[in-house]
Each structure stands twice: as C-alpha cells, then as structure tokens.
Image 1 (cartoon, rainbow, N blue to C red):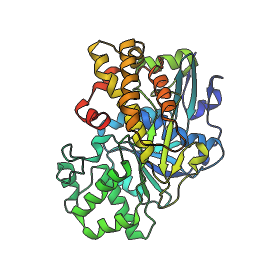
Image 2: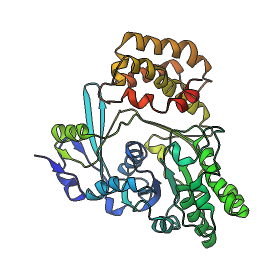
Image 3: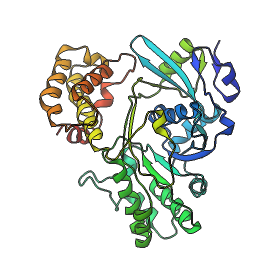
Image 4: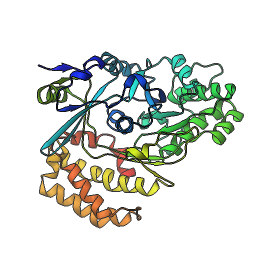
Length: 387
C-alpha cells in the first residue's frame, strides 16, 4: 500500500522517506523562481530545504513562476500535492528518498500580471532562473544577446504586456523603482558560462530598447551574480514513479531522481540580502570563473567526448558507455592529455581528483542518463566544451 504525497500525509510518510523538519505553514516567500523543472527541484530547492531543516532562512521560501503553457502541466502535478517534491538520490548499491517543502506556491504560468505583482512585493528579494539557454535570447552567431528576436521586440513595444521572463522581470523592477523599493537580485541557476553576465545583458538589453534611463538604473542598482551549478538530474518517467512506489511506498506525481553529488558555487553579490546558504553547502566566492571552467572542460567536455563514439556504438546509457573499455580509455586519454592541462588552477581543488569524481559519476548505473541526451544540440555543445 502506498502513501499519496500531500501536506496532510507528511505525518504518515514511510519510515524510509525523510520529510521536512520545519513547519511549512510558518515559511515566508523570499524568492520567485522561473523554470520549475527537475534540475531546480533537485538542486536549488534541495539546498533551501537543507537550510530550512537546520532552522535557518525561513523567510526565503520559493514561489514558482513560468511563461509557457507547457509549464502548466507540471504546476498541476505539484499543486495536487501541495507543492511538495520527492527527491531520490541514487548511487551504486544505495538509494535514499526525501520530501522537500521549500516551495510554497506556484503562480500560473503565463499570468504576467500576477507574477509582476509578486515581483513588486518587498518580501521578494531574489528572482532565480532555470530557463535553459533558449530563454536568454542568445544569438548563436555572436554569442551575445539578440535584441532583434521577435519576442524581445514585442516586449519592447510601447505599453506591451510582457511575455518573456526578461520582460516580466523588467516590469517588476519598474514597479519597485516607482515605489522606492530596493530591487531584487536576479540569480541565474542555468548551466551557462558567465550566467550572471548573460542574464544582465538580456535584462539591460531589453531595458535599453524601452528607456535608456531605465537601462542605466538597472545596470547601476541590480545584482546579477555569476554561479556554477552541478547535479546530474535525468527526466522523470513512469520508471521513476514506479521505483518510488515499489521501493519506498510513496506516490508522487512528479518525483525527481538524481545523483548524490551536488555543487553550487556562487558570487556573493546580492542587492537585497540573501539566505545563509553557506550553512547548507553553497560555496560563496569572489570569482566563479575557475570553477566554471573546470566543470565546462572536464565534466561537460567529458560528456561531449563520449557522446558520439557511444552513439555510433549503439550504446543507450552513459554508465554503459563507461563499461566499454574503448570509450572509457578514450575519455581518460583525452581528459588527461588534452583537457586537464588546459584548466587553470582552481582553489582548494586537485584536478585529477575532480576527474576521478567525474568518472565515478558517469559510471553510476542508477541515474539512467542517456547518450541521446548528450548527443543533442552538438553543434552548440562541441564548440563550447571541446573546441
């Protein structure tokens, strides 16, 4: 017999599933997050859940937001279980499950008015993003923000109702500026190099199309910290829902399965304060670049290295590729001879140890990460990660 996940069933969770150790009813919102997907729920939301479990930061709870109709299905699944998520960490020979409660609401995707109203609330001090690279309107030829993108042009039109994340963020900042409220920090959690700079280029670039003074105000007053995020988190399928029900006795509409490893390195630049996430394992640094370059070259470059040989060999999963001596040997040789020598020193990190960690992560048979996923978008990935 399984327990269906909801606030009312938290007291009845199976003994092998950990639940929140805090009173969710006492949480107060401090962050609006755009792009409530698997990675966000396995990463940022878990760090916040850890913080809340320690008794700290209870005024930094999450509110979800989005701009696409396709996000409504995920919202409906989470609403049915009171915004709770089960996170299952899978390693060789071991699985653990926990229910996280850091999200307390999820605004209807596409309801720009409701989202802007929330962004104007002084209690919201951070707006965070996992909107994938496509949400940043980057011109693939130049690698820079594309002000001519039709969605950006539409949001820049006089009296336009914004439809993009950048447009909604800007509208929220306009409201706060008019009301004399300190602007929120815009914090990208996407796996994009220099993600804070990329985000600021987009928001300020859109502002410049609307009002030069507004663009200058955003540039002078809003923080866009760079960050490096890492946790392998595959998509959820019926397989994962079945494992959760059969092995843990819990029914979750949209669980998240991930590896045990997670990392978040973040610049300590915030306009309106921040939660004490260093207490939950986040590394706050002055310069993210060394960590970012290490991950892009060794981890992402490693994925790019094995993707096509494994694909040509008809190998389905990443861990299966690591069991193939030719693929594993090719990866090790390329990493040690060609990639690692190009990586500058990283504080408190031995690069060979980091590579061995990557090998173990790639070899985890529980994750179910597919070679097909690694092969997608190769024309964009290979230049960034390898060339």
